[in-house]
Amino acid sequence: SSSFSLSSASHPPPSSISHNSAPSPLPGPCMPSLLLNTQGRVIVDTLVYKVGDDAFVIEAEWDEIESVINYLKKFKLRSKVKIEDVTENYTSWAIVTPPKDEEG
Image (cartoon, rainbow, N blue to C red; front, side, top):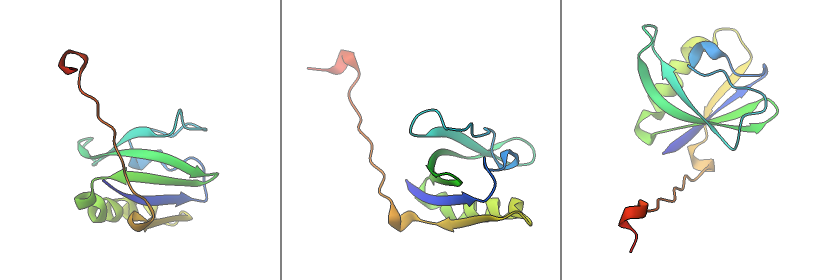
């Protein structure tokens, strides 16, 4: 996965670009979210992390980052929202354990 940031001067981020409005504070370290097209179909699933009072990092698959950023910029209009790729600033890790019935 790669990440890009959605920094916002307004809090929370605009809910019109995500299926999930971000509560304040986010419940836990991150919150799953979906970006939807105008027909309500899923474009990409993401994880949203709150990293500051008015700043969020949205994690998405590396090969979807450019299209997701372009999609979000269409909804920015005149709002004071800064959208930038911060992939180089983050590393994504996952710990996967086998199901209980497969443990040896």
